[in-house]
Length: 302
Image: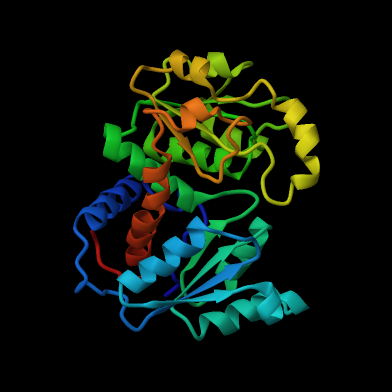
């Protein structure tokens, strides 16, 4: 039987996504040190990009569940010396129970999934960041309840996070308002598939009107540092500040996947203010991914 992979949020149904959120909240609120469903199991973690939250959350989650995690970088493996991805996938999956990749090219993860005999998890690619959305949606559900029918506003780069927010809108049934500078919009193919779930606005202030959640990300992601000055000019009018949050509902939340640059994509007043839930959001990477690991590896319905 082919393993169940988690490459995109579109790999989940709405019921499965909500079940994962519910399970993540339960695991967060009722940690049982004797519950070790992954005892003896091993997660291989392949990192082409540096990481704080992804590495700690997956490694700690496996430890909580009685399993273990291996940190693998291209520098330390044959991946960095040109071994074909399909060969690496076959070999690594023959020795572990699950593989998580945080990598540059989305194709790396899809190729691994094609040739792996165990579940493959997308820990981040240049195209999508679905694990972060599990945590973001868990955080919203904890603070405000189900997000179905709500309005979320994305301000900034049409990057991998924006793409995964589009997918979340499709799966969970909310509307996504997007304000991006020209030439930095999300991929048309991803937008087109979402239909009426996605709406574009000329300014962040218009996009934030009557929103229930406002989200942004850094202007220059990892690997784009050489574009920093150019992006600062393009995004100078796309900061999430107090004016933007006032346009949203009074109880709107603010999220950011971190790390953040205060004074650039978000003002310190907002990210450190009462509407910000960034640290709940960061912690929930652990709980959401534990629910995901259980879902993929335990084969028991929740």
